Length: 236
Ligand SMILES: CC(C)(COP(=O)(O)OP(=O)(O)OC[C@H]1O[C@@H](n2cnc3c(N)ncnc32)[C@H](O)[C@@H]1OP(=O)(O)O)[C@@H](O)C(=O)NCCC(=O)NCCS
Image (cartoon, rainbow, N blue to C red; front, side, top):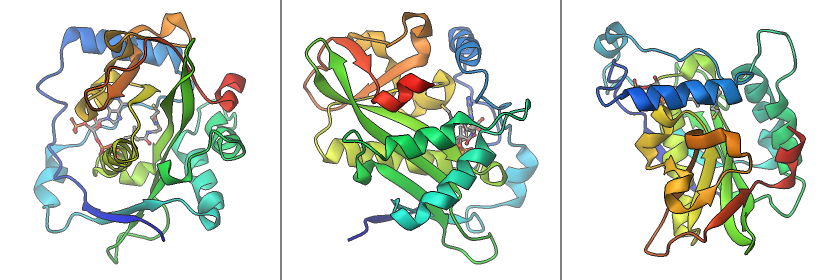
């Protein structure tokens, strides 16, 4: 049975976040240098949007498990969301396909967002997946998030947040103890992510520093060690 979570995208706040601090900005810059090929300019929502699109009018999305019939649409989404200025095909589309091919694939943790309201388009507008990784040397199970993407026309409407909250809730409910990712700290902090080193987890690449983050669940501390993504990430 498909699990579906209907969620109303958050009311736009129309500002860049009062809690921004210089160290977070520095980390975000570091993320850009590590991930420059896939990080777009930050979408900045205007107050005009906040005034004209009230919560009542805000498009709602369903977050549900990805199914086989979604794969082509997800590929199209990834090619659009990670489009690069140099014309190169975004690696994330191939990555998602490779991530579905091995024992590291966790179907319950590959989610799509689709609109439920008429008048706001149809089809998949967002996608996220988490796959099985390990924390070495013990080989303790952990999750690696990525890719996460939202169609540009839907940026700033809470779709990415709905996907991340759904993913984290599903991960916690299924007994996972830690979720890791590489991403802009200013975005992922709102979901409870902190630099992974604070949980004793080292990045696969030591140069990533604070942009490699972890969210832990429950009372059990994550096993200390070095996180290893599912093998398809090694080809990036
Ligand atoms: C990152 C992404 C998934 C966010 O999706 P979204 O649906 O627009 O996000 P939400 O509406 O939930 O959240 C919007 C907030 O995130 C912030 N944000 C979005 N992208 C960000 C980024 N790269 N760095 C920092 N903040 C970011 C917005 O400024 C906004 O902040 P505010 O709430 O303070 O106004 C989307 O921009 C995207 O698909 N980008 C292209 C692919 C990508 O870079 N994926 C992430 C790779 S780690």
